[in-house]
Image (cartoon, rainbow, N blue to C red; front, side, top):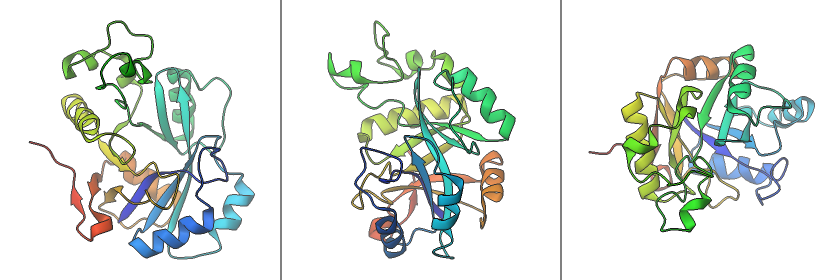
Length: 231
């Protein structure tokens, strides 16, 4: 089952131009089977989300959010509201555990491989001096004890930085996911996650995440979905 785990719409992300109906139309067109609404401002209102989801019956839609923490951005699944204090990764971890949720470190190395001073725009290592330049150095960040998986295929991140994330996740033995980070129809589905199970609701989705029955992939837009693998 092909799901885009990282999508932003105008409903909850001020930097997005993607209308919810446009997202549905484009998802059908390109062959997505599910999308996760990871809005910056927190999950959709429950009533509004249920109303929107009931407009169609074939696409799996998951209500989630992207949280800006003190150690970068994290996409959070299973937490149905924004809780004060979750900018702290360990507080976020506790809140998610209380709800049986799942936390993904999103685009962790975006901008990191740029030349100074532009690498200082990386959110994960904000304030570090010197900035890490190798996988071995990056592995020292304590946030990896907090998260469940690493986003290694993000359509808004450079290939080299996605590859760096893949190397780190592999060394840590962390599950890997893919998501477009779409803010318009142009990016939707460029990076996805393929689940081995047929998923029909959020409980099944969370179960599949916890069971690690998935892998990151690209190629949906050209009709050749392939797992993200590096040698």
